[in-house]
Image 1 (cartoon, one colour):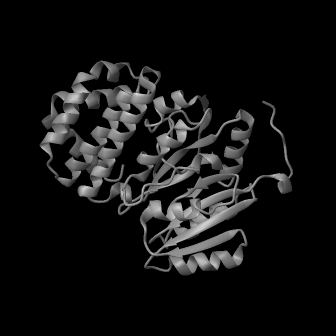
Image 2 (cartoon, one colour; image 1 turned 180 degrees about the horizontal axis):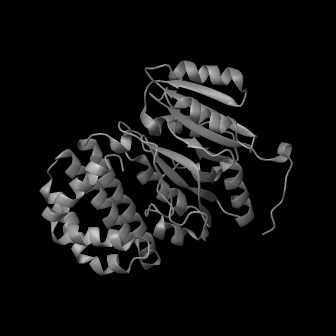
Length: 334
């Protein structure tokens, strides 16, 4: 398909949704990265989700500076509730999400839009660069490559973080994908409950591994907070998405089994760090990994090192715990 170049006045409206809660140290960097986008026809929602710090005031100040910004002040509903408040009323032909402690490259929205139009896709994605409080960062080993997927191909690889990630952020969606989908309120790890449903509605997804979305990994964020009963939302989401994809697509999505194992191991890792004991769940995960080791070894989406880690986990859990604890001492926020 030949790209049709439009003037700025002809470009469609794109909505950017930013949930805001207890991030006053990071909010300026986030909002400025959106205001500096090369794609200018934006509708920007800053959702003050009952933040107890200065975030609400800061949002109002930004709105005074730029007419594209709309601020919603609400009682705390969590990340999903904040996103949903904007999803219910947004006007854009396309929509994207940015978490308020992250930032985006100044051409991210333009690049995502161009790729979506050129490929005739319903979802356009970039690879997140993870950066840490010590100044280090990690990027995809496929950085710069571009993939065009059918939804079956996308579902086959989207849970492997070096490919299409489960994160709702760093993606541009046609608005119709959100007609009947909302983020699950009251759940942690809400992206795991959501992204596969969005992919399932697409005919084509374009994914570039160039890092245009910059994801801050920090202590205190949802992904790195303590283990409690709500952490089981991750485990439940893994089961839900696997059951849905396996039932609907079967062998058209052959690697979903390995993806399930990979994320279940992540869940057990969180238990190890927290000293939480759930022997029944851990043994269930181990048993499933053992039963599917052939698929693990043949999966092209994970490295040999990751395959060896899963093997050690499945067949010698005590040794795995020792090695994982050593790893976490060196990489506490990984």
